[in-house]
Amino acid sequence: MEQQTLIDYTLHLADNALVLGHRNSEWTGHGPILEQDIALSNIALDLIGQARNFYQYAARLSNEGAGAAGLGAAAAGAGAAGLGAAGLGAGAADLGGGREMAAGARGGGGVEVTEDTLAYLRDAWDYRNCLLVEQNNGDWAKTILRLFFFSSYQYYFYQRLQQSRDRDLAAIAEKSYKEVTYHLRWSSEWVIRLGDGTEESRRRMKEALDQLWKFTGELFVPADYEKELAEKGIAADLGAVRPQWEEKVEAVFQQAGLTKPAAAWEQTGGKQGRHTEHLGYLLAEMQFLQRAYPGCEW
Amino acid sequence: MVNTAQIWSLLEQVNDPEVPVLSVVDLGIIREVREVAAVSAKPGGVADTGGAAAANGETADEGRAEDAPGLEVILTPTYSGCPAMDVIRMNIRMVLLQNGYKNVKLTTVLSPAWTTDWMSDRGKEKLKGYGIAPPLPSQQVCHPALFHREEAVPCPHCNSYHTSLISEFGSTACKALYRCEDCKEPFDYFKCH
Figure 1 (cartoon, each protein chain N blue to C red):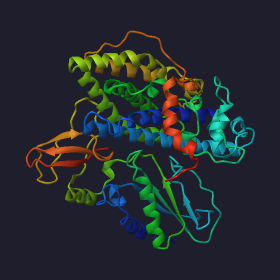
Figure 2: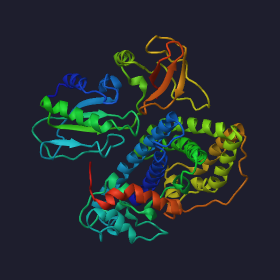
Figure 3: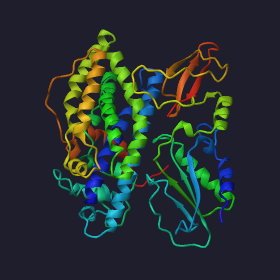
Figure 4: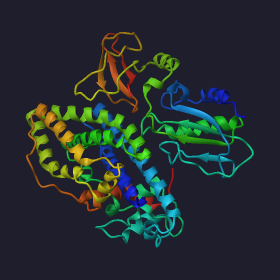
């Protein structure tokens, strides 16, 4: 197996968790009431913690890969020097194929890949998160529904990833699964409260559904790196996750008095680095400090 | 030869910064203490895999052989995003250094995942004394059923079971917020995990 495929997959999982964690953290200090503000911030913290575990693993794989000869990944960033290595290297990478993205870039200056370079120094086209998680927060209903869609996906996904033949991914999945159980319960209850709540909460929930539904299909459309690793028993089989997810959504929607759209256009591309306009703004804010003051610590 | 029993008792001095009444041993996050041949090639003989956690603790940290025996402490986080872990790792290193253990390697493992069942009975007593309801024994991991509530959590102040959940997310990831309907005091519950 090519190491880069495993790095791509690990980054996809890391980016999903980081971007949604960041989105949820945007509510910190702005939640509708204190307890729910704290709840969403707790969930954000869990997701960012999960992202760190995946990034650390991806960094380790990247550095191991860079040590070996003949890996294309290392070459991609080789032109770039200094701290910008990961990000700059990717600038030159092919958008569609994405094989040579920054992940493995241990720059010409010998800069070590770390969880921080992966999070802060890759640009939007290097990020492999699903489009769903990067959508802007909108109102409380949209934030809740996005979290519900993604938590129910993660719940069944991590269940399967625990069986991965890659022991590091399996261990992260085992840890994350326990946390996601809380996220799923909390967000499900809120979907029901809002959907089956007042006229206004119901209207807002339906609007959120209109805005988000088209991004749910992508969760189950495997990218090349997912297909390749699923065949090897490393990635979770998304085809098996989908019916469980649909059943869960159906059950919660029934209680919430919401109707699941029959079929719709499925917007894809995030897993390959083709994002909606929202991700760029998110990264601009999240990465500002490291871009303006490289290597800054406090 | 490293006296691991002594290491364990030293680790009793390292507290959880978020719940300072508990030591890291009480919390159950120290999984193993063992002697290793050599742990580091860095000056000062200090290795730390804390930043780059090896999920299975299987990552060989290749170090140059040194004369002094090394020590490896294996720990696991409570929650993936627990912000106390970095401070805990630093404090463990400090306490061991103060007691002459220079060759210390800290390894973070994720599997098997931490559970409140690993919290010591003494730790649970201390929590209650501190005003935090300890995790109930034999609790199943958070039930996915909606609006499902755990069995009644006794109030750490008046021992009443007449309590209700305010929010299942409290001031830290590991706690939920409850109120006592009898003594009317709000309290933290160290939730099942």
